[in-house]
Amino acid sequence: MRILHGTRFFLKLALICGLAVFFIVYPGEFTFQWFGYKATMPIALLLGILFGIMAILIFVYQCWHWFTGIPGRTKVFFQKRRIKKFEDVVIEGFTAIAAQQPDEAQSAADLARGLSPNHPLALFLTGQTSYLNQDFALAQSTFALMAEHQQLRFLGLRGTAMLAMDRKDWTRVQATLLQLYEIRPDSPWVLKQLEINSLKLALIDTHNTAVDMLPFYRHLSKSSAQNHQGLLLWIKLKHNSHVTLTDAERLDVLKMAHSVLPANPVIATTLAYALFNHHHKHKAIRVLQRTFKVAPHRLVGEAWLHIHQPKTAIESYQKIVKLTVHHPEHDESYWLLAKAALDADLWGQARHHIAPLLHDMPTMSVYTLMTEIEAREYPDQPFKADFWHQKKETVHHEWDWSCQHCGHGVSTWDAYCTSCGHFGRIEWHKRVAPESAPLSRLNGGLTPFILS
Picture 1: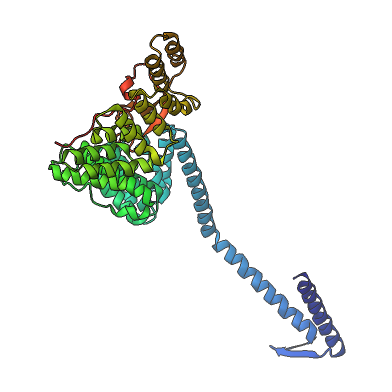
Picture 2: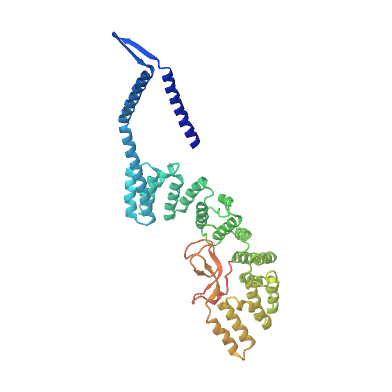
């Protein structure tokens, strides 16, 4: 590019030099007569005069154009200044919102509306500020205006959904979330809120629709969709007092819940008890086998023995061995085998099965079981049982159903935590056991949800 600029300069210089040489070689004259006057001048001088006159005219035109453009330039200057001030005010307003300073945010929102009342950012700032100040009437009207604006529609509907959540108007929340879903079906926030809100709606579902597959499932992973469907079904079955189901309908709901959550021991054992009460013993056994293969749990073992109804303790131990054959080295299998061996007075087997549990963060119930083994095998040597009883006093961990969000312990698994309200967060987890926790709960005891 620099080479081209240098070439142009030399071409212009060559042209000027060529013209100068031309006029020197061929000077020529120009003569004109006007009102009796006659003038003669060289051609070069005439051309110089003409170029000078043209330059003066161009200069005068540019000066005129500059003077006439002063109002327009002044207007643009003040517009840019106003826009810059508006941008600074909006940034200050959102910063105040992030800092949780409502008074400063309100001042910035008022100033932004004064500077540019119809600007999308002014509407957005006003909506956020009014929501922060809990001026819900202004927030509702602002969010409604935002929803009518093409660029702000998603934000306006999101604000409307948040207001409805504050009022616990779950039906309105659902309608708004579905509109948001149409705009951005792949939004993680929208999908998460649809999951949560549909579960809340299931608690008040009077139309018996909790078993329907929801449209947004196609944007979730298969496991997430199945987990959500299982929670919906369990809420309908156990918590929805507005829905009256027959025994056959309850059984169908349990079957569907188990099909999407086969690893859940509470759903599996509840279904197994229900099938057993309806004289479907073999189906109940298959349900328990399927769940134990996926996720071993002591509740499944307890239900297994209840349904098989063994006549002797030895037979109970043999049944547990049959159940745990697919996961013989799982902690839950060790627990079931050790407990069954203890009940059958198989001291060697009981010690063999409980040994792995004594090496990996032993729990209170493990030491309790070991204390019982020593006491029953050596009733005349109480110091052996006392040794494990003292060990029990030094540990504070126990397997328990607890919410992984707030840590609240519960007696059994449920679809949501009654302490913090979060759905799907209760898990079988080794945690620090509360001092007042009953041993039956720590051992995983369950009052079966039996269909009448």
